[in-house]
Image 1 (cartoon, rainbow, N blue to C red):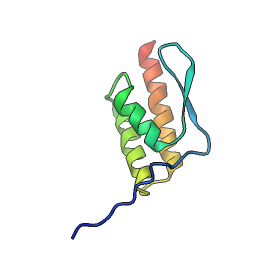
Image 2: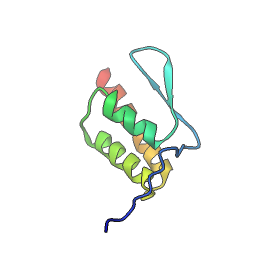
Image 3: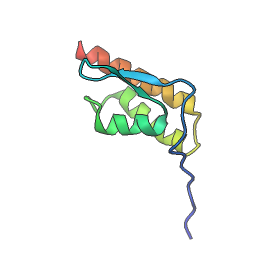
Image 4: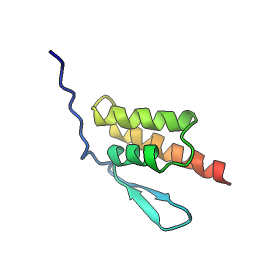
Length: 87
């Protein structure tokens, strides 16, 4: 018999991360589930160390294996790395 893994899709960070999309208005990302979706569907460069850490960290936070604030920090860093590549 398999085990059940609890996933908290409604988990939110204390403060959102605001990301700029195509020079348009900022979009607020409120937690690891939304960040993971953004990383997998809307992120321009799906490679690099910070990108991988952000994805892994968001997954770990959703399954209660890591502090959600750590996933926020990695997501924020990955967004910063993307911004540096765009310039």
